[in-house]
Image 1 (tube, helix red, strand yellow):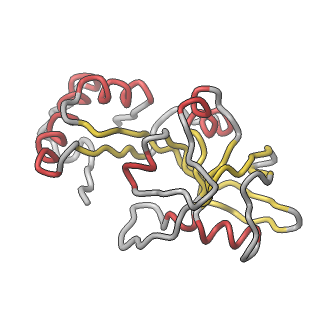
Image 2: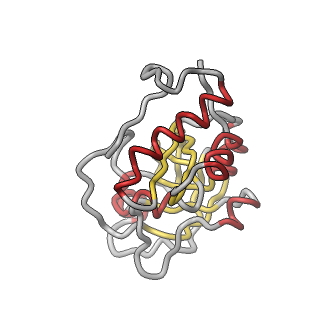
Length: 188
């Protein structure tokens, strides 16, 4: 079994040519509470570049995770727009408010601007919460990446970049980069 870590993400970032960005994604369903409302929420622990790679744009007044928050394992959360309404109610600005995730306090730093999303591999972004990957790893004890995403600087370089990423990981994890069963890639 090939299990990837943040070291693999750093290696891709260092070695791959024409890379716009790469981010590991750690996922968990966490009991999330605000006031008297409590519900299970799909949470993704990601790096700051994730928002650019997935077209997750903060609504006015908010922001996505940044490098400092990632490095310091800050307890901050960025909410999908539908999740924000579900937790806080329509017309309420959740930015700066504190909610509990698995009993730990998290400050809301942003809400996603509504977007059209016609495909997904793990649910719609509007229903998710995003926290620094380092924070989710510390909270859950996970050390292996569930998914990772990357993007080429231009679309015409995508195929070459996919091959290069597989070659980088194959050298490190000792598999044949041409083995289509080693790691699955979903190209959108």
